[in-house]
Length: 374
Image (tube, rainbow, N blue to C red; front, side, top):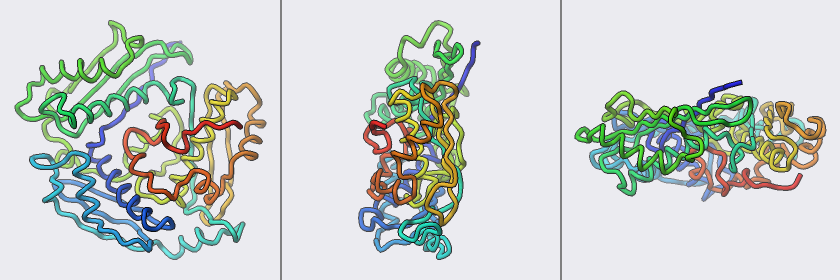
């Protein structure tokens, strides 16, 4: 049966991703000086203003304004862009972590020697054998397209484009098998004097043809580039940005469930982030070890309680051994308490800026992407 499924990605200059990057930049600087930092850092940008709020409890002393300006510059917003890292107004309004939350994190209800979860909730991890990244093909290509957009801007391969951009890829399946790419959509901000016709040709030649595997493209594949015809006003000038507003881009492109919690700006005691990384670690290794072609893991937690409330395994009928055996392997091989996750994945290290853009999964250098024998 023919099925179409679509995933999207955004560039690091997208206003929401700019906010994620700022939040994770602040978190990394805090963790460099204090591994026990507790933080839930939120950022909002718009109209040349940046608002930083949330909670920070740390022995580290950092210059938040300096970090914010550096992050904006690294993304590529300066001079005549939509937000100027030198001149933008920065408003900082943070507080310490609630003592009620800290009580539950520092003293677990079910184990006095272990930290409890920083919040309740359910987290999902997913993996499949469609690509070498163990991620769905459409999502991988969408990320590759937006990474390429950022690359051509920074290296001035195409002149007259901005930092803001998006991609979207629709894959056609025959049952569960990839057949072809049905549609590719790319939108990129550009200067007012840039010819849209020339831009479309340049994006097709320098981005799409460079990134998308030819074997998936045929003469029926639809390619839409800047389909409105004009994308001059973009970035924080065209739309406000907010931390945690691209959770499907950050995870599995819609192929898997999502618990609703965002990642960026959160220290690893917050299981929204750390347990999602562990769930991905487990799901990837279930597939990589040959126990299934597709695997989704759900973990759930209660605030202040160290051990997960539930663990759920779904291999969508692709498993080579019973799912209850897979569940036993998970319990035997993975420590799923918040402290166990933090220690096994090294989550007190300042690694979070590396996660922010183009998905938190599929990057081989991240610890939860390691393949182990289970």
